[in-house]
Amino acid sequence: MVVKEDRGRKRYILFSHSEHNSKMEIQNFIKNEISTLGGKIKSKLIKLDLKKGVIRVDHTILSDVRDLMNKNESLKIKTIRTSGTLKALEKE
Image (tube, rainbow, N blue to C red; front, side):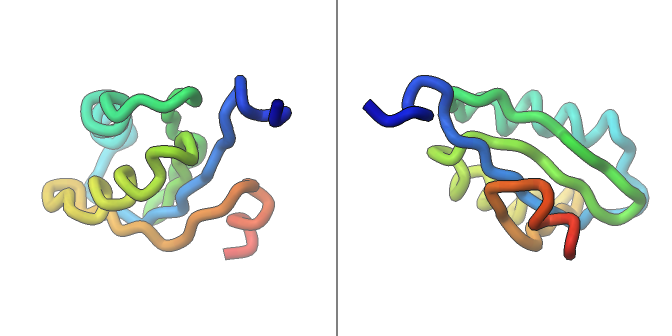
């Protein structure tokens, strides 16, 4: 049995967004669009600045989440980088 098989593995996605987006709009996008994909780990907004943000997702739905984020025209979200740790994304 793999150690993280029961818990799941996290992935963090660094993304850029329009300055006009509020935190509430991005959280609603996560709740309504991304959370419906499932996964063992609950999708969550970790960090949000004026132009960039970090979201935590399950590794099994990573490619679907990136596709959803890049195709969203209203929020103008574009993924930059994906990592298994937050420390690696802080270098960006």
